[in-house]
Length: 312
Image (cartoon, one colour):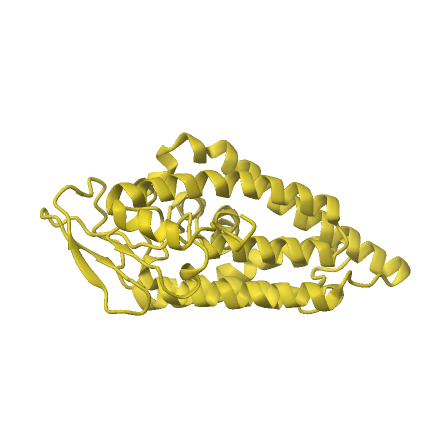
């Protein structure tokens, strides 16, 4: 999910809690680190049990090969990781998702036409966003439980993925969507504006939805923060590119902004996104190569592209 939506979800969760709880509980909901900076990295973390755990390498669609390593020890153990969600947490998760999409798309477009919700001018775009992030986060959380804690995220300790790049990405993502939806809704009211290349952009968003769904299915509980890896996944979309979930994000966001006739906002958002994602990809790949050595080097030789085949 989704680095940009984590902050939005926490803010919206706090607003919801304010309506039903005491202020202290609202601040607890806002500051709690329950949502990961999900990377789409093809590995899963390992619980620290005092002894080194085996590593598994998925080669194609063959049976995983166990690779024992005595040099990898997870110092940032997280015993609550993969703990099943409570019923309250399961009910809250889809509500938070819908509220996030409302804040990102429906609220600014509604403000433009003096309504609480601008769904009438955005066609199926909000539902596509809900399907996109819902297919990635909700099944994983329901099946495998909680994500790793924030202090186990290795990428936050890297300069290349500093807090500045994250904030820049969040601001550009939210700002570009607000600008695009607001100005499109205003034009729609005044001159009945139409989508730009609607079929092409819809095809790109459906491709992004398919890609993120397949990638999330391949990762399973490995879709998590950048914690200590013990499994390298090279099946499904990971046979072609090394970071397909990032690819899906870029396709979704850019096609939506182009649909809403905001090419400048799209360009600024892509620049900030690439700056943030590139740093995360470097730290993720460095961690994988450190843990898997020649196995990951061989995988990089097979999957030559990070994001887009023959391009990048």
